[in-house]
Image (cartoon, rainbow, N blue to C red):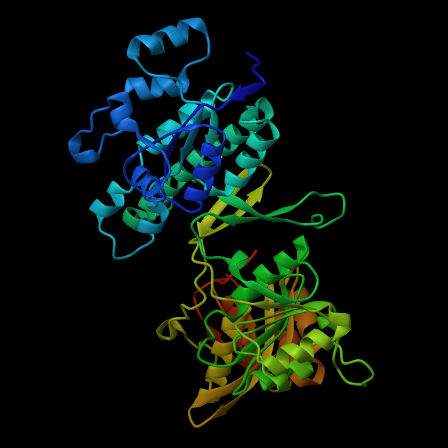
Length: 536
């Protein structure tokens, strides 16, 4: 026998996901392949009029424990694991079973069940497949003789292989399918561990062993730079940005995905009001909320229009025609519009989509977002190590009862509201983060908030200088938020001389008394949160 080409005479089929099953089985029978099937798979094939034999009857495999044990028997696994040597074939003959040349198996839908909050523990446990993964692993191990098909997505590939080789498969194809099979069983085991941990143990803290399974979503042209290979993966079993829809524009690059992912969290927690942010290389260049989405974008863009060139726009309301007129470069018009790489929003009116698609030679990448990721962790890979922490929930606001004002000046309600708004924005700014902001307060609520300067730097007074430089004269009467404490009074001197009237910061420095005293010298109101907001 040529070990490279193996004729498929008998195929075992046992699938929970019956997508494409009948068409695939019909292709197999066209090559004269005998079909063995279990339970519901056998029923589905019979109802389609296909010749199929029952696996358990054919091999005399007893079912036990109310159906919990159906396939875990020596004759079956012998038929899958047997090499085509005289010794192994003789043993199969003694057991009165024939070798199985193809195993078509996929598993109980554990991920779907464990994600259902209504599913109880018994239902979850009963959807842990044992026999299926065992058969797939056995056939993958014996790839020199057995063709394993662990997913409906592989049916087309297998049929093409059979057609090219008159009912046989090549060693190269079997090896490739075996690798895919081991990735499927590994992902399934990861889904079980992660799913059970999140359901039953997540409150206990982070897991002792971190398992990540992700599937290739799409290849990028290259990584951050042309000499780096790159692929985008979707973390299995999660809702994430790979499910968002691109409505128009050029193909997304690796850097585009970085920009999109870093932009989305910025608006989380501001769902109650129209909000917009402009983002460049993952950093906020402007943020605002206002009664209308067009005004919110206009205020965000006006923070630092030059920085928005080639940047990303993120909005939390449907984009209307008025807003679309403001986004992207308006050719032949002298205004503050700039070239925009990406626009992200939950929806676009027909007019808005038409306007955006016509700009910049149809290059704006228009993304329709469909919701936040439900992945509970924030992870970073550094030098072969994975750093894992709980994902920040930006919907959880500062506990105002813990906010104190040790300065002599105390805030009016309008100033207090602006400080709280600026604090929520600085939480999204990389450390050392500084935000200079202003707003409108009417009838007991803050109706508008907009940034005037946003900065991060390797030292805090450097970030203060950059934010104030961007704000210019607009800083007079504005407020400031800092994501970490002020180590020295020099930061307050910079803010005071610029005319900033109030500041909010975590406190906790040994220099707090000196810093508060500096604020008093300028008549500045200072709020202390006792909560740090670093973002690296």
